Length: 162
Image (cartoon, rainbow, N blue to C red; front, side):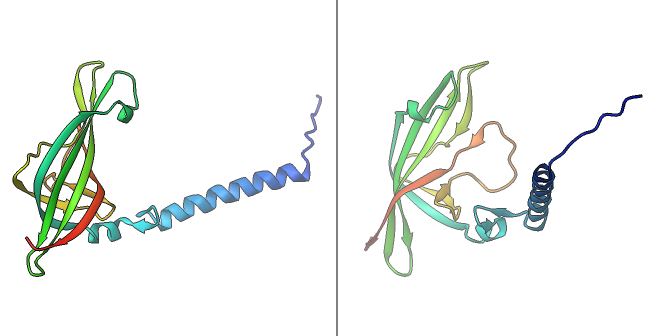
């Protein structure tokens, strides 16, 4: 019987030990902070959610091929302008929002990301999501598909008067 000897350098042992230690530390930190995303806890983001009434003054939809990230994709960028009135202060904040609605042609035509249907000269229940996004979708459980797209705040400006 022939015994094979394995020679392992001290450096290799240290590297393996360090890699294992790093993996254990990373897994431990994920267990300790399960709700941390982008430096903020999910609970902190939830507390920043704010319900509002959003008055839409303008809606524009244009083809946007730059939003496609797979073959057989078609995208439309929805640009919405509107405002939120602050009742007691008499001011209002005007917003420009965008959302990319994405369609797939394969294997069957379907909506992958939906922005929802909003129209000018209407008041809509909406929610600021605390991360630069606004949702016109109702609260509650939802099972995709399609994914519900959020509107991104492109610009905002406070104005006085009504």
